[in-house]
Image: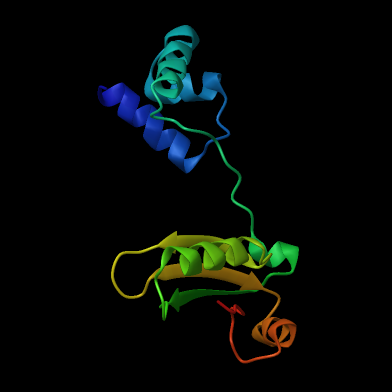
Length: 130
């Protein structure tokens, strides 16, 4: 990987919808060599995909919070049930299993805190029973 490949990556990280022509112009290559480099970066797994960044507020999800979760029990069955339950909660945008305390970091998006509390019936942002 050379400086041109790194520039291609930086440009695509900032604006993934660039056409190959625009990308080539910005890195100072003609279209064909730029396209070959792009395809090689994809083939090698350096570029794993292209994604849309969605504005949660435009979907009526204006309240977003990071929730730290510490498990009381960490046996395999409890972890499996928790992760399966987590996958069913529509408001969960992303979850990461951590090592140490807390055990999970969960990004939750909802209309507002009152909407999430009313759907849980508690003052908890996440509602699970192990």
